[in-house]
Length: 72
Image (cartoon, rainbow, N blue to C red; front, side, top):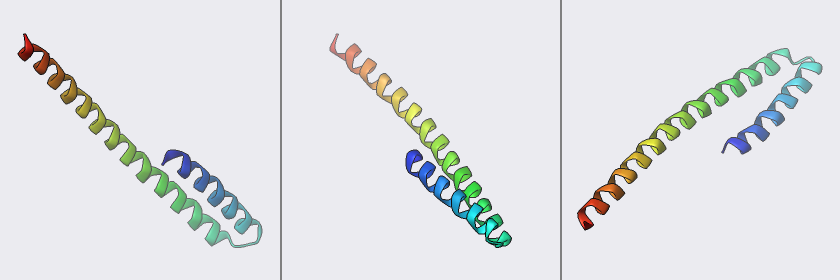
């Protein structure tokens, strides 16, 4: 997802720059704001995912440890 978003950001930034050069300053500013907003949302979701993955790894490790202790 992150790699895809990088490509989208580059494309949208280039489009915003072209719009600015063509005299469409409002469109350019609006596009940049939307790009920034989307990147912030993506970062928030990536942070949430990382925390959940860490919790999952902890639970898995506890489960494996518990299973090993029960076999003894």
